[in-house]
Amino acid sequence: MTRRRISAVVAVALIEIGASCYGFSPSSRPPPPPRLLPSSSSSSSPTARTMIGESDDGKGGGGINVDDPYADGMFARFDSDGNGYIDREEFRAVARKMRSSSRRREVLSVATASFGSIFVASGSNTFQLAQKNLRGRYLEEYAESSMNELFPTAMLSRDVDEDVWRVLRGRGFTPENTLLGHSVCPDEVNNRKEQLIPLMVDRWQEENAILLPLAHFLTKRNETKRNETKRAGFALGGLGGLPFAGKSGFGAYLHHVPDGGRLLVIFAPHVGIDEIGRVGSLQRDGQAKVSSACGAAVGAYKELQRSKRARPDPLLVMDVDGTGDDYHYHAEFDPQLRGIVSLLAPRLGGVEESADSIAFVTYQMYGIIRELIAACIVETADLFDYATEVAVVGGIMINRRKGGDFFQPLSFETRRKGGAPVDLFEEAFGDRPNLLPIIGSKAAMARASLY
Image 1: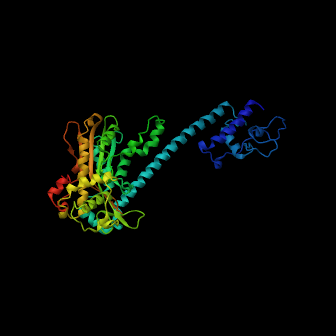
Image 2: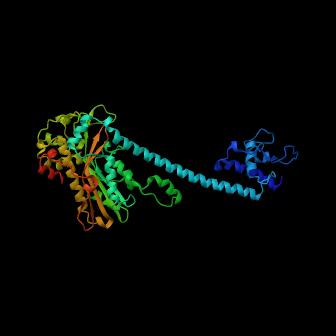
Image 3: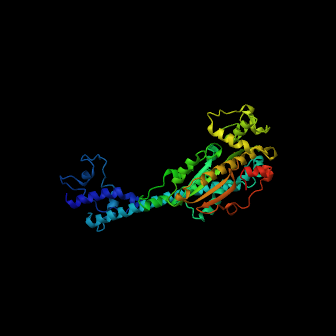
């Protein structure tokens, strides 16, 4: 067999391999051309069929059968002069087509991944939109009433996320130059996908995330992906949302900021509201009974009552988890709860004048966290050696079994080197709520660092 004929056989094999690259459809095959080798050939040399892989006994060894109309049609597609052979120029056409199709397939794969990401993001946004606009059909009436009374400007977490993004983007904050830090309770109810922290982590982990597959394709993945610490945010908080990471933890967080970048800190205690409107309790997924939320804050309040450092409280929420007046903790083994008890004790004056004692405790927990976060910022001498600006958002996370999770914004400010704090609250969230009827006294509001 001549070299030309051998190359023709190899070309058929290559065409078969590359068929998927340019989408050849059997329905579009042209009529079969003259066969590659005459069927009547009596040559004793190996036939094309044998050389491609079929055994001499005709039973086939898994190779390509050149008598197959599919292979004939593929061959005819590139046998432009119709002489029954694939010459060098015709083979080059095969190679160019395969290379072009391979590139086209890569682009289509990237486009598919990008559109898939857009679909997923759109699906998430659709869920949030439905949650906001259809919640009136499935919300718990008494829980809604309690929330509106005691946390009057509470917003769906998605709305808070968007308002913070809108304001900070105008100040030059971007996912590329900003490191998110959060000081919230590690309770699992604060990490559901509709809660504020997961939403903000998604928002600030990577700009234009839906275009990442395309970006990686175009740059051939030469750019290093941001480290996982930045993607997940930096956790500063412990029980109750207090920043138990302390000054050392805040310093570590600061030292992870991108060069010349910015810090965004969000802090909040959390509180549950159950279906009958009790503040401080929540029916959790998978549980039939109601439990306390925040358990650390309610537990500290119980301990202060047990030790006679707070007035007795007859609220039913004190017994929702079955512990009642028998609740106590082991100071030696509960260092975080011991810290909460110590910090909360001097702030309970006037609780009897409040509209709800657990709401009162929750606002006081907010004040504790805000003061600790402020201390970390003020006492970090090299803060602006690493960061150009620090934004701090504070409020209360409100856990609901139905109707969506909420956030009551209470503060939003930013700091730059040598300047006074800039208040961004009204720009982001509008007018501040009147909390005096809820807290009960101006002195208690001052202790809670409220305005």
